Image 1 (tube, rainbow, N blue to C red):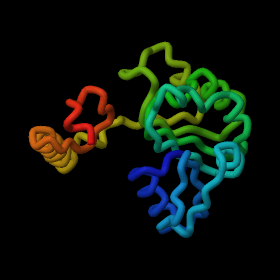
Image 2 (cartoon, rainbow, N blue to C red; image 1 turned 120 degrees about the horizontal axis):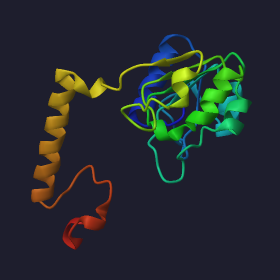
Image 3 (cartoon, one colour; image 1 turned 135 degrees about the horizontal axis):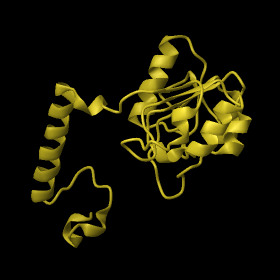
Length: 177
């Protein structure tokens, strides 16, 4: 598991429930993890050891395209890459070549770098590449949760106690805490 936020942790719980030996990479591993069955390793170790690599991390300016030819070469030939995070994390040309050349066994992608997918995306012609629609947010429960979060964010801001702040630069100085 690459990324150990809420989604990565949920994936770890499911993997543990199925008896999988879970390894994870996160820039700041928990000091006293609530996941004793998860072993935290370096990114290189994770890609070389895992049978399935699941990307569950945000995309930042620093990690765009980090899944490239060099990292894919570290994977087992029998391994699979799953990306349910952000399409820009993966160099799509490198992944298509790795699939075509048998460097890895397959990929399951919920996202691509440009959505909707462009006809010239090299992954469309890549063997053993499965695409699923990125629509987990579309269920009634998910939309109700999103609406509640937006309402809580607005109420918090109006009370001078903002929550879920991604970039505090736009906040008034009194609300930056």
